[in-house]
View (cartoon, rainbow, N blue to C red):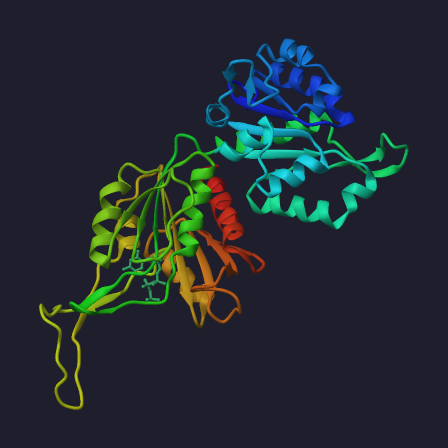
Length: 399
Ligand code: CTP
């Protein structure tokens, strides 16, 4: 069955000669089992009739925010859709969307849509290459919308070059790829730990570390984007996951993180332990602020529980465990030892010796080491891209 089966697609058609291709796009989407609602700008109706598209989509076509005495609820349509596709998208509507100008039904719906948005521009060669267009495309991409690249060939003007709308088959392929990806971890439940832990010394002081939580949060978001149920146990971090589907338990200390993680692990298919857990805590946390006395003071520290090792001990045959090793020296050796000691299936090694890697950076450079000491090294990448590599590796562990 196509990944598009049962998906609700909102198709916005704007006034380009390529609008005629929208008919076969609608036909292909319907054939793949999608539900389609079509929105058109007034200019689009000069190129293809709403009647054609209403017939093919088996739904009324909307061309205006209000028609006669009724108001077409663009907010409702935006919420209805699983994906919005703008094809063809003209330079004019592209410019409007990139600046939030809302003077037609497509712009109004675009601004209210919460679903992923895909856009397939269509325009003449020089219009496509103009810096204004390139900037507007960049702005839409910056909003998280996905560009379906233009094709090259003969254009309506007679010029030959880039600017043609992607073929309907290519657009359908992008959409079904998106839905297949979004369901690839459906049915899996994953625990992720992230961030530092703060171990109180007294009511105003703590022992902690410089972890921002970025890497673990990016992993939680990536898992959820692929359809997994994610339980994120997050230490004191200023950040939060961007996907509302991620379930977050905020904790302060290593012992709180241990409790939260061990409580949910039994129900999970995997755990990714990205947290930088403090190995020791003050033996006693003072009730009142400690006042200074004398030239020296010492704190007695005691061991915190090791979450990764505890989960490694209870791990069932179907469960997978991924840990991290942040090292400043002898990275590989230390990582190998941790992999075995904590009964992990995979360990992510990052070395503070690599520039741009580790705490508080947006980037990271990792080496993955699996049981049997298989090693894979990766380039320096944004943490969101590193999260994709780590989740791919987890998917491989499930086979
Ligand atoms: N970890 C954990 N609980 C702890 C300490 C570490 O769950 N109390 C996890 C980390 O989240 C990470 C892995 O274990 O996935 C390795 O953490 P690291 O601090 O590098 O290893 P340690 O076992 O603490 O070893 P050392 O401090 O000697 O380097």
